[in-house]
Length: 632
Image (cartoon, rainbow, N blue to C red; front, side, top):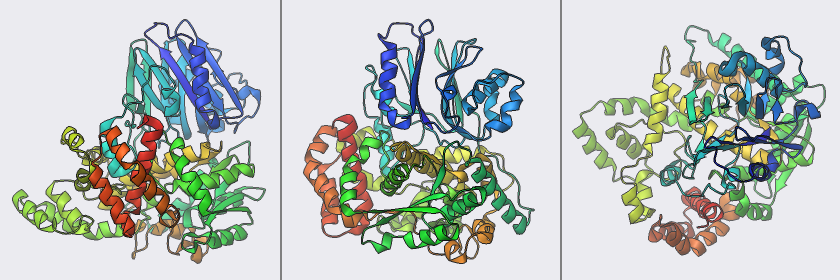
């Protein structure tokens, strides 16, 4: 894993010292690659590339980047191609100068051009200067594990692994994109191509781009989920295939020239990875777990220890104190230049810190399993209510409006109100990660001016786009649970979990790998019939059955906890005080919020309304983020 930067000045007007600009961009993301750094410039064509290296495969100087091929092509690459040894012969006979996967990308591009992407199994973001075509070719991996941002202004195309590097360029201004902000209030994350900054964009997962002398020539999708018809396969066959697919993915993610460890919560997903890693490793796997001082309700260390003992891992624990949390919380916005109001970032930060302290540079995580295999108990409620939702949706519009208005008298968080309101508006029932503010609530604390500017916006537009993508995919059957798993993968996994793990791992210069996000496993898991994902009220049924041969019942079928943090207990006062002390200035400076609406929220929390803790976190995070990145 590394960090990449670049400029392509196709306007040909002078920028000044371009090499200095690239070096400055490198400095902004030095944490992504502390082992080596490099720059390359083509003054004639005004192409300038920068790289920060975290050495994982081929630790020698031959793996240095930017890397130039004999044909003149040059690449900067972030990530890993797990199957690079398998595909290396496909490029034909040639003299390789290194044992790196980076050089394999160069050789495969030379032979197959843009079609080289279909051969790669890995996580990657790269930019490749094609000397013959005088074009810059960029691509992002299928599921979006590696970040890639870009901006085109004044005839200059600039890209980077992180937004902060783009903001270091003198012509790039930190201006709020108001529509992105509006949607962020609903999802606490941003779907591509949105960022919170005007004119700065995030590359979609599974997309490629070509930039030429006239600017962006091509931006198109090269991969989408591929469904298979598995309806005639037996449960036993699918169960065994599930195990084999995960085992293969774990094996790929053990490819490294440095030690590979794992984050271990003691839950199903992380325990399965540790079990499989231990079977494939000749030395004990290093595992890392987290606990919270005097907070037993958030503590899973007991289960992590059992799994560690079962597979003889070299186990390390981090017990976080209230003081450590309170000291870290104000700094979290420094990491997230693309905002992510997710409090689970806190424990992952400390786990990453511990792993680096103990010399582990590559870590496997269980990210993505719950979305693919329907692992959330909240899914049960949706599946129970979907038949009623479909029936109600078929009623005449006037009748739906009457019923919806009757249920509008229920509380804002009423599931029935949510269901009938969405059906009346001809919207999809399941919104996945829309866990923050509903449209009606947003209107209460947004300023009048901003409400007027955003009156035609609705955050359902995000779901609507994903639904369009889902319905465009060829498939033999489609159930409600298929849509739920697809949206969870596309929205939550990519925009939240993978982004979160990349940011927090890279904050400590470690690489995180997610075996459940192997694209072949994703295709297969999303194709499994829903009746096997949830059976008898048991989420992730087929995955748990597949893992029974390596994990004990106590681990597989205990109540799910997930990564969480004692936010209210330890930081409730800190956040409330911050919001209250900065509220007036924040509302005046941004012009986005209605001060009285936010004051009411703080008042409710002061009264002990624990349901508002996540709302408080979102507002706290936004206020701190605006101060840090927009000087508000």
